[in-house]
Length: 477
Ligand SMILES: [Zn+2]
Image 1 (cartoon, rainbow, N blue to C red):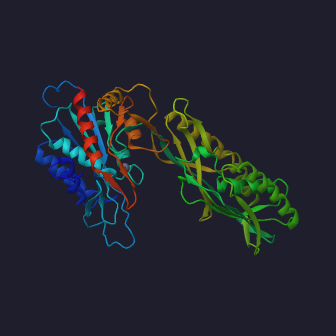
Image 2 (cartoon, protein in one colour):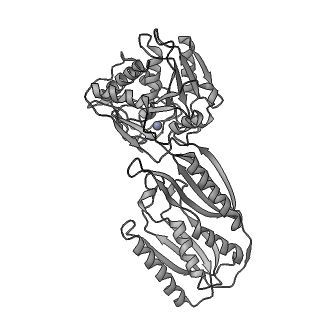
Image 3 (tube, rainbow, N blue to C red):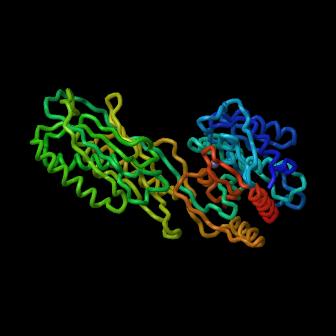
């Protein structure tokens, strides 16, 4: 299989591969799309963050058809092999073909989501196609938090049908995705002089994992386990107070480790004995999910200061009761989580204690409930609570006219459409939030190794999926 530049989608893939387009560096590619639209004489919008929407009128005979949104993100993940010289701000990608796969020498290929951008440009460019009015959205900053899509306005669109071109697999279409919100839970701290013995409580050996894909696996959460052990100790040794608390790396990852420093004058042997009971219970609970878990209590140099007793108690009690992990699963799609929370990071900075939490839900109402639970709970323990970067999810619906058309198109060439459900966030959810009645499908070719220098695009599939796209458009009269 060749990379044939006579095919418009290959030609445009090559064109956009010459324009550096890492996230937050989309002005060049955005201006390229604008120039393209001008040359073709299409109406377009370029917004403040460089999203572009290009409007192509219906082909002959489709003037009365309902419009369709096509969408892909312009930014790509920039990763390279260590031994490769490549400046992602300036250098074009070095494309080559190997065994039917398109690749970029030593770097990510940007098929995620250059494939979708190339498809849209090809469809916009080709005047021989049959299709309803098209509203083609080229978004930015997808890879770093869906920020381009979040900035879109409802008035850019009149369609209530939508094809997302950022999800590959050729014979696979997504049917649901989750929304998300970052919750920041914080507490102002005051410290007091300390002359008690000091210990470090360590939580180790947990697997961790992505908070979308792994939240249903009953994995131990490092920071919540540290708080639990300390709370269980505190109920026996009342003078226990926190000095420092540190665990987790990212709000969307289940924390694998945590360190909680505390002071107490209790008998060291009694303390170790009590801690062992807690650690043993946890090991028992996690024996089939996180079998390498272990914990330690290590005596360290006396801390000069410790957190005020009441505040220290409030932190431990709050973390003991705060909702976390899987909250709801789908009864329509087996194994799918539809609502979850992940306490991802705990730390003390500038005299404040922080917990970064990621809330995910397919149905906005589930998100509302989880947010409100924390709103109720936080003040009870004198915590502050704020929500950031919220975006909506795309709840599963059994009936989809667009999915039916895609299924027919695939069946006619002898393949069965598979449905994929994710608890992760997609731009689809943001569009669903903008236009609640939106009928959504995702369509795209087979690609592998995304976000790594091993990223590659199956050229035969690139052909077939484009054919499917044209056929779906043609039948969406
Ligand atoms: Zn993507």
